[in-house]
Image (cartoon, rainbow, N blue to C red; front, top):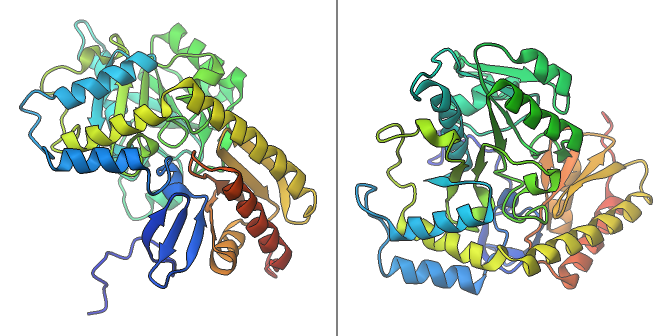
Length: 398
């Protein structure tokens, strides 16, 4: 049999983790890796957080799953907490970020189409170049990236693309069919590219002017990653709808679509659902994460660590001007923009220096450590990064 049992859709490396300890992963052979990837911004509490482990164990022994045909005291509790700390009035729980984005798209369309006197012509969502919203048919259609489209034609209708951070381009796409604008405040897969404050405020103003929904995809940048609970807080705006996932479960599959009462007016009985979404086990994980990160002390610590990490990175890249161009990002969601394709350096760090990072678009190396890193992990990171930069040989093609 030539096809492996695991469908070969991932370019899996030779790193095979079997255990995690705080900010490290340990493979089958006992090799330790410093994890500054965090499962791509998922394991925000590291790999052995006592509160998260305990909450999952206790809930697993009590009740793991019931249908959404029944009441959910666990879901109600977590939803209320999210409502209390965000702009939102109501929450739909999902199992992933792609599902959260799907729900956000449906919510924006339903706002126009399902309301009394609504406009069934409003279905288009404006999105942005190099965005990543997931791997479902709707979310790949919401991206302009050809590499994600290949082999899956025809795409779903209803999406228009504008250059990221270009307000006039977005404005030019608004028409009688527009239902909303969906944007990542910080593009993750696109290269840790924060939107400008003027762009984000401009999108909010455009949505208000035209009566359409502002949807934020904070799947990667949300849940304390940038030093505020959600990144929109640092832009001084309030969205209508927000998709969140990754860190919200700390490693357990969990996502959510958060919306204002107005935005969710079309999401009535029977319009949406999920077999596993909001299951008690996921709710326990989400509550444990909230207990750890949804407080001023923790958020302040993320901002402080982010500032120190960024300052040290900016000082570090001056030693290797042939490799690195700049540092960008917010909080502990940082990117090193390289002067060449970043993947060879990412592989070099992983395979030769046991440092895990994440490659991204725009020649960027993503640095996404657990939010619980301390001085020892930061020092270890720079020791490994320095050794990696010193020993890296630029590929001939570069």
